[in-house]
Image (cartoon, rainbow, N blue to C red; front, side, top):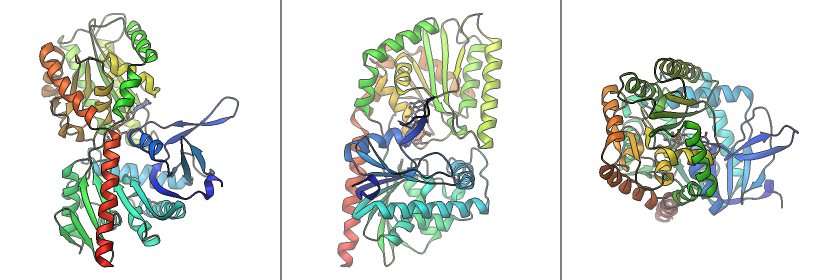
Length: 475
Ligand code: GDG
């Protein structure tokens, strides 16, 4: 039987597939694991469980046949050029993304974008209905597919449907701005289980359901009349901790870390930032804070380097182009003002690196700087803790990252408070070895004990048991 005919009892549905297509110079095509938080988290789950992954393959106006990959089936969903513009770059990334991240950039509302969003969500639901076997468990992912749970339930009431939101669910006052707020709430309510990164997200959602719909809400349960019960809870996502630790301790990565230190001229301290180039990640503020520390002589560029990786992201969205220019300018200006004639104070790379290079960077970072203005979780913080060897390291973490709820021993900052952030960055770099070790020990334990497998098991187990209760009662 071909992959096209294979039905699955476990289906993950996400905007993007877990793989990116790479076309080699000789024209041959291969598939490589895509970067980004959602894929980092779910790819190991799929390898372990098998099933199907329904998602867009990344090229417009092109149909790709299903195929097998690492023990599961890839089920591509096609998008036209204008759908990429309106559903993906538009409604997903220029309306929902900024709105759900506290409006740190101004969300745009366009009716044509909404229409495309509905059409594409419908297509994802149809594809899923086609590949899910009778009574299958379907796990819909993230803000691009908020309508899929309801659409899918209408087509396939036999399915057990989970939904997980990787980004924050915004405060009630912000969400209310959305002209399509009721449709989106009803869309999500099609799930048996709605998961958010932190409890605040689930309670924002429940509060909105209570005020904006007719459904009865009792604690974390919403009774969708004549249909099912939807439960909303927090499931803080994590990483494949053991996998990252093993990678970071492999001879190749250790050698790469040494080579990196050679290249950097063996500075006394390495500060590191790793982010998609996204305005939610607080890069402007971070670069400014580090720049001022160099300019004021509080950090000596002869001893200290700030290494910032900014992975290219959503480059066709205006706000992201502006951000790229701003950071280029800011880094250039700082580097032209501070330091000697050798290596610059800020080493800035606007590119994507293999995971092994990421692990090598985490190994050499004395201070990991994770300062988003708002972030659902932030896996980079957790990857650092899994990869950095020993206990002499430091994590500087924004209180507005979901990860801050769990990683309480981090050096916490408010990224909007530049002076406060500068103080904490210095404190993290100069704190006594004893304090740094005490904090790192607790943080590393947290990440080692809360793995991605535990996260997926918890969600899927809950989905299995919660989904059955109302149906039994109704029988
Ligand atoms: C969303 C939410 C939530 C980055 N550059 C490269 C690369 N990466 C990898 C990192 C990490 C992932 O991408 C980024 O994950 P984050 O969690 O930091 O951020 P988002 O992409 O915004 O993820 C976030 C997450 O979903 C999961 O729920 O935590 O809050 O916004 O794994 O290592 N990987 C490689 N090369 C790069 O250049 N190989």
